[in-house]
Amino acid sequence: MSGGAGWELGEDEARDALALPAQGRYTLFLQLACDWEEAWGLRNPDGWVVASGPEGDSFPLWPHPHLAQACARGPWEDAAPAAIPLDELLDDLLPLLAEDHVKVAAFPTPDGESWVVAPDELRRGLEAELALGQSGEESP
Image 1 (cartoon, rainbow, N blue to C red):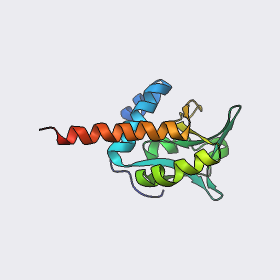
Image 2 (cartoon, helix red, strand yellow):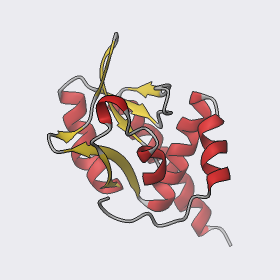
Image 3 (cartoon, one colour):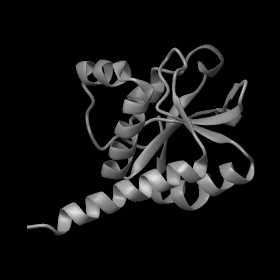
Image 4 (tube, rainbow, N blue to C red):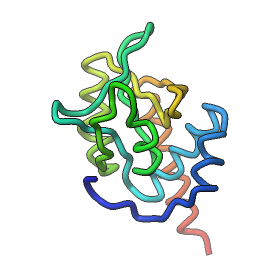
């Protein structure tokens, strides 16, 4: 596993997070990615894994390596979680995904359910969450 999670995720927390509806997991993803300044993808010997579906390709992202690892099965069984620093996600990865017309599958579950968003929409969500966090830090 590449990198290290900045926080421990208990089995109950993981189960509760995975049980949330897709939009709830998306909101949780935004909060946790901003709080810990990283997201997690899956990498195999060929590079980052990408999900292919009827609406095109999507790049799956999770807020914690254990949640990503739970989805490393089937065609992704040889993949391992790898950290993506938040600044790299915002500055490098999301623009590349937008250029290649690849969407983001935010916080997929092992059964493949996720909240699929355009890279620009994810950027706006992350930037809004960061702004909320910064305004919260300034209040007494």
